[in-house]
Length: 258
Image 1 (cartoon, rainbow, N blue to C red):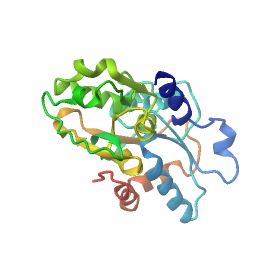
Image 2 (cartoon, helix red, strand yellow):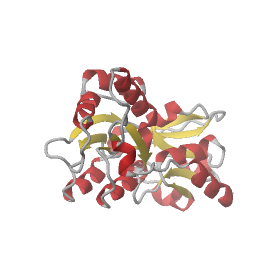
Image 3 (tube, helix red, strand yellow):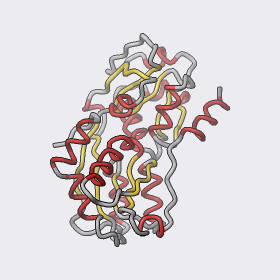
Image 4 (cartoon, helix red, strand yellow):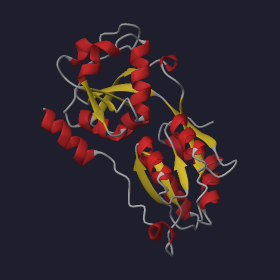
């Protein structure tokens, strides 16, 4: 089982695309957007709509927010950053790499427990809920709690509910939330903690529990233009994402957009 987990993490994890400057700046290419892995479907839909309006389609690169922030801090060329939490955006801001007054909250999300689609299990996350018993001897798939936003939210919720110490030895630490989702969808883990929007995007899983909002910090996705951005469409696409039209796209995929 351990080798299968590792193979799935390697093969199914979402990895960042190449950051060669020529790719994003070459003729016909839109701005390079670094976005949290959980935004794959919604951000692709937004990029398609932007292209349909007559603009070059943005180049999208998805990975864990932690990995993207580190790439930005290593001066990887890019135009926009959309993080799955405020902390990694804060890190980039402290490094002086955000364009002034460009940071804004884009959408919010919820945290859920998923099982394979055929599972009849139902969990009600509350203090002392029987998560360890539901796992049996299996793994709990989640983003790495030390770095990946979904994993950090998940660990915080389990700690608040008093069950983290009972299951931490069974955690399968995935490189991003989509890799955790894949472990459950492919039967390598009986349960996983992901965002509600991830569960909605994957027919191989079903939601078996929803964490109370008060069990973890609010799940917010900030967007910002990077200070090194030179693409002429970067700011316009950022504004499009924040517009009524852009937020309607994210709502279609289950995000909450005010």
